[in-house]
Image (cartoon, rainbow, N blue to C red):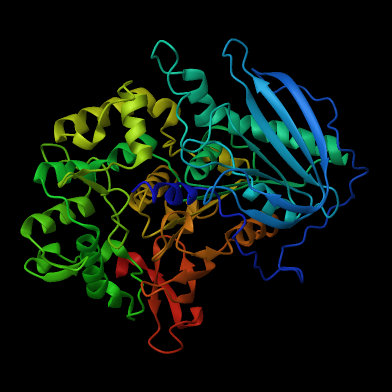
Length: 545
């Protein structure tokens, strides 16, 4: 598990570097071109004076001209420690803000290409417990011609929660507020001011780009600061934060209750069997389950099956099957009431249902992100052992988290009317095999917006959700789409995307072209044509099956 953790957290980093830009209104280079009425009057690598965002003071401003070359992303692989080649010459401006009385120091980092600016501003989100992009996204965005910014919110990296409690063991509410919402807003305010100062003209359009924590930041912007961005791309969003974070400890509770800890190959056997049973639901056995919610595979069908596991023959037991069923079903309270959604059928078990064996004894090994949220933020006890959670403790922590943090971190407000009225567009996709954030939570949020704001058709005018078959958290498995290009085309030309053109990876590791349908539509094979071609599939109403 210790070897897997960084890879999963890395998946939370926005996929700017890997996102292919394709659109029918594209230039020869593949990027949607933008024609502005006036070119930048000048380029000076020093920001003009600007007022501090409301409630803040500017502590310092620095600017540095950076020549073209290879950018080395800080840190160690896979989060960092790798190069990004051919980064153009650009200006890096860093503005450090503080909220008087809070003793915080939040840095906004803005990169501005020296030439070839496309007239747009882009804000980048973070991952896990980091509000900031790792640097890879900044470099990639500058290569695409964007002026781009990110903020560290005054907190640490993805795995750093040393800031959560003060010296007295109380929650550092100022930094929670930074991380939750206000620093992303201040990024938008400062970033756009820096752009106007350096180029001598404001950005024509502003976009947010984030996945996971970055996706949550994007939704929070739409909810609380609806005029900050014209378009928001928010993928695998960590919304409904307190429900999903605690819910992702449920697999550990299930295994503890059953005193059964299936091995990785046993869990894999259940996923392979579910795939075999449900693969054809879209009309074609292609290694992708188009609509996992319709997969009704019963894990008990595997009871008694013998599999080879690390050279030893293992027999699937009723207890194994029951553990899998409850993990897929999701957390329920002692009375059977659903608390949240479970791991999607087909998603990798190895993160949330991880185990460890010491001295011949196997126990659970909870995923770092929800474990720290429960122990440090909710219980105020960094040493609290979430690997031994009982159902009663789980329910108590679930309710405590919501009561204390929903107002600040929940990001679940379904009223997006101000964002709609401001003309904003929200494009969101979520992998249907996300192993970290249950896809059902994102669907739940969208359905609540539909119920509040007049139904699917009206909401589709400004907010579209796409569920990508077979794709894991933030596309860790290689899933790619034209999401950013689709968003810019929607914002700037009014062309609402019916599908996202994507390259997906099947269960056998094969790359196939697919049009990812907007929710609630799902993909179906037409019955003829190349199974690897997107044209061989069509989108149908998922409610009709």
